[in-house]
Length: 147
Image 1: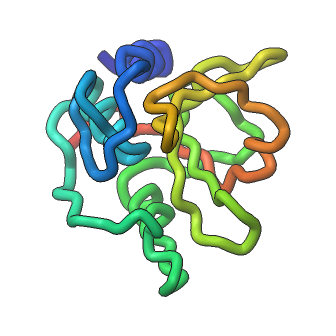
Image 2: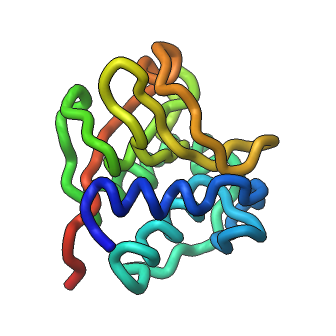
């Protein structure tokens, strides 16, 4: 299952999964990276890399842009305003901080939304409102084929 609609369908299949740091098991628990890992498996097959253990601060003390590097290595970066369903969204949760939150664009247009695993809420679909759009650090497209 590939393409934007398939990616969104796969991500929506995770809605309701509880938030569990470092997990990636639909229905049992995941964090934002775990959601993306699960969507990758659902749409593209085996994960391309083993994810090492990571802390809740996502390398903030070191100022390391680990998720940005991962996105640039595994996906195609898109202009921030070139929205399409199925895009992977990378957010900075506060200005000047490393980008450390991921989501999947679900709807575009007048009522945009995205799917993400959010601490205290689990996997949900949220409005891609102005506060979220201001936090957007990068937009990526999943590869349609893996090598």
